[in-house]
Length: 129
Image (cartoon, rainbow, N blue to C red; front, top):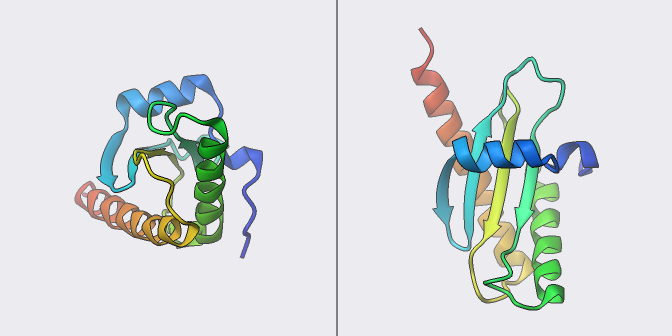
């Protein structure tokens, strides 16, 4: 398995970020708000992911950086559980005002990836002729 998270898998394009938050679907699983949007299969890029911790929730930069590091690491270790046949844009927004432990964040990340699989497959099954 590939446990890397290279720059090509991180969402950094302003245009794509705006598209994700304006046109994407979302759900809430404490302490995350997850925003996702399917991509056209013809695009050469694969799944791209964004991690965000608002300054309004955690005021100190070192706290925001700590939470983002934990989010990235938990996604990196569990991204193989995301079994989609087409690439998507993903955004994880941390909404808690408390710093959670890595084990708590990782357990929530696993639940989120399972829910994304479930939602994608149920929505994708309905659209088949």
